[in-house]
Length: 190
Image (cartoon, rainbow, N blue to C red; front, side):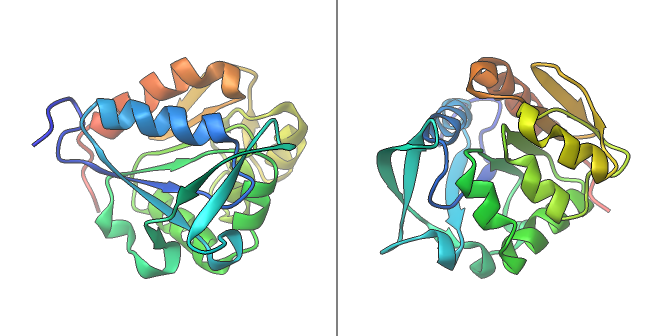
């Protein structure tokens, strides 16, 4: 049995091919080091032979990662937290998948903590969960967030009732610390 502030917690990471490698690996390592078990979820369109292709800076192929399950095979009830890494292609793929969008929507509706970095808030927009929330993101999608009703700020990490967002890989140390803090919080479910 692992020890740490996230011992006994199960954290989902939802990603597709095109995910920014460092935004997948560093948060996963951080929550594991804090004691959590992680499950890499994807969508059928975002995998090849059960693996996703990560990228460096959106254009250089990096490593591939084995997917533990497709998002349509699991339930929000199976997890205590959700990480949405960025990269440009990854959230663009996820936001076109009805099961991924529903999973993200249900996660936020259930009041469970979620961390989204860089371009990942595109999936939050598609899930219809940003209106009235304060978020940050990669600069090029901030207009999309505003148009969807979010309050957008340019800060390293922003937390709005369990929803943690960050701007870029440069913010990963603060992002990882904040998602661990939010995932460790006891939340009363409705």
